[in-house]
Amino acid sequence: MFHESEDEFVVERRHPSSFRVRRTAFTDPDVYRREQHQIWDRTWLYVGHTSEVPNNGDFVARNVAGRPVIMARGRDGTVRVLFNSCRHRGAEVCPHERGNSRSFTCPYHAWTYSNTGGLINIPSQEDFPADFPKDELGLMSPAQCDDYRGFVFVCFDPSTQPLSDYLAGAKEFIDLVVDASPAGVQIVEGTHRYGVHANWKLLSENGYDGYHLFPTHRTYLDFMRERGADTKAAGKRYEGSRALDLGNGHAVTARRQAMFPRLIARWNEVLPEEIRPRIEERRRELVGRLGEERALRVAEESFNMLIFPNLNILGGVTPVVRVLHPAGIDQIEVTGWCAGYVDDEPLERKMRLREFLSFWGPAGWATPDDVSILESCQRAYRASREVEWNDISKGMDREQPDNRDEEQMRVFWRQWQGLMNDSVEFVRPIPQEEAVTLASAGGAGQ
Ligand code: FES
Ligand SMILES: [Fe+2]
Image (cartoon, rainbow, N blue to C red; front, side):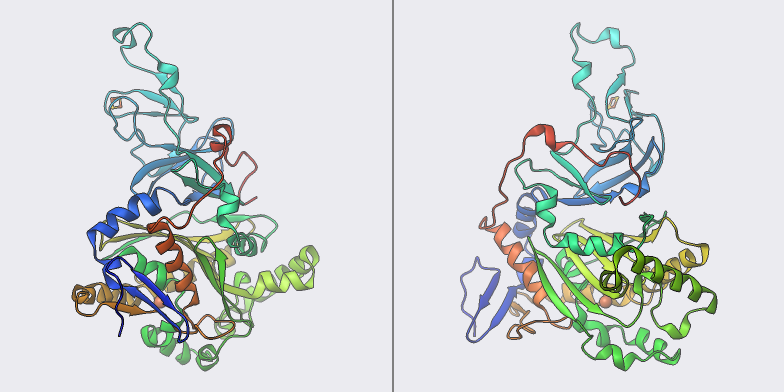
């Protein structure tokens, strides 16, 4: 029986081991409000990938933790993140989700900004005061913007450590995705977008939860078995399977699968013959460029990673980038992108998109099952006064927990708790000049 103080949400014990999370962490409005400034205002948050804006003038408009932003490649070739809010009286200056434009004209009173952010035109400017500071009224940027190998993030807190330090061990797994092709990652146009009636942390946990595969995704596994796949092998502990703490709350479950995931080869039985020569070609290129050992890892290591708090990078056959944002205490907005490579051949691209749609899509093999079980958890947390605790102790006594254990979630919750109660500090303030530098021209995924 647990007797913990009212304000502890995460309780970790040793001898004997136990790890529990208080269910009101998913339901308490005070927790939700505190998360806003303790987590969303302080951590680095994913915006998009530079390959989504390949040409000067390209832009995408996004929401990042509730803030509307524009990621635009300016006429100077630099990718910037700008707040999508007019300096006059606030309207979103860019009402489109994506496009190409030299400037953004606010739909309210038509102030116009260049695609580098500067304010270039004010209608009836002569009516404004004599020394009206037009030059200082460009679109604003978040306190920090940076990219890692084309993955663009922002941070609203100038005192958080730089992105590269923040990402810590997660960089190694981003590298696995990016290194798979010499031509670079290309985020394929189009998104999956769906909502879940659950607290955002339920989905953060779910993205790398290997324990739920068999009970929750039975329909998918039955289907694959009918197609001739050896799903029993998938039930065993994978070779090289491990759950890793990557630092700063990021964690990954990784496993070696006897296949070439990023080269399209899951379930060999269902691969069309025409794709095999291309896989061989990719294999040769990888070995030539990276050496046997690294090539094998880049090609065969499959992983599910969460970059704290809300970015999944799923490194399988088709790398998937999925970001989730809370839209209320029990509402999640999810956006998923399929990552391919600039040098994908049409058949490769088609197969990646098929996998992306059929497995990860809102109506795919996996997502509806996950959505429904997460919503079930959230409903049941209404009884959290009586049924107080979640247990997250699986694999705690194992020296190297694996992808079927729950170490990755413990990493998440330790960071969450540390940020919420201020015992985790992001250090090293950075000078303001550095704060707005971003990916410059140079193309996708480099
Ligand atoms: S709010 Fe944008 S021009 Fe007035
Ligand atoms: Fe799932």
